[in-house]
Amino acid sequence: MPVPPDPTIVHPMPEQPRVVLLRPLVTSPLIEVGEYSYYDDPDDPTAFETRNVLYHYGPEKLVIGRFCALGTGVRFIMNGANHRMDGPSTFPFPTMGGSWSEHFDLLTGLPNRGDTVVGNDVWFGYGATVMPGVRIGDGAIIGAGAVVTRDVPDYGIVGGNPARLLRTRFDEPDIARLLAVAWWNWPAEHITAHVRTVMSGSVSDLEAAAREVPRE
Image (cartoon, rainbow, N blue to C red; front, top):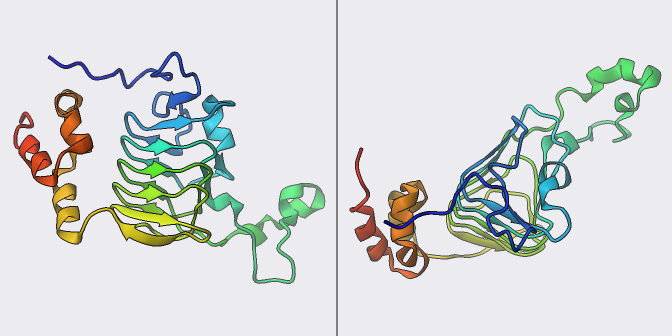
């Protein structure tokens, strides 16, 4: 029987310490990552929580689905980065301490778009940045250097600053079929048996493999 890789180890490729699986690595209760999603960085990939998820003071969460590929330098800007913009100054005086801290009420009610949510099977190119509260659909591709300021549709390809939709990977009927199959939710053993279909088969091939998924 085909054996899937172990999703609980941090370094799935011992000869490539720059690659880490994120699910067994992250410890913050504000970050949720699905199995097999990985990050690649030649410097310190294990510092993902502090180097790549910025201004994350909560309570908003970062949610990343399964089988996502994050290139070097991908960063998520969280809601804690927001400043007031309705007065003469944007400087966050109360956070600096001293008597200024008596005015912490001035930092309530800042712009907040909620959780940042990434779907399954999303590929992030080198140096992409995701702004607070963005939702990225399943199967999307985020181009290198893109700054994602708005939601990305399922199987959309975006690029630029601000990122714009360049095209979708499939037409609408096929996207609907792919979402119905949701191969990323199959048991790991079934995915392992059909890796070639998942990577290079047609939508019809994937649907045929889906009909063979063991039922509990």
